[in-house]
Length: 70
Image (tube, rainbow, N blue to C red; front, side, top):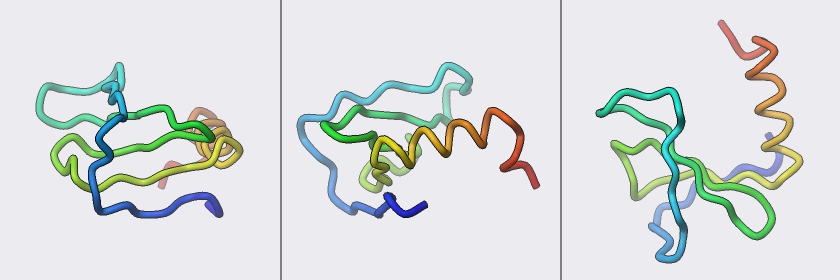
């Protein structure tokens, strides 16, 4: 996706929410940004990806349609 980048530093002000479908030890977490979202693996909270709003919508659309399955 064009709007993604890896960030190595934990932002202080983000409010992380766990995905509704996760187990206690392995979850995806999402935080809203001014112009997109940040996504991280809860087992590696210091690293996350950020997506602009258009890229995030595209990713969700493809994931929901099954287009991202191997």
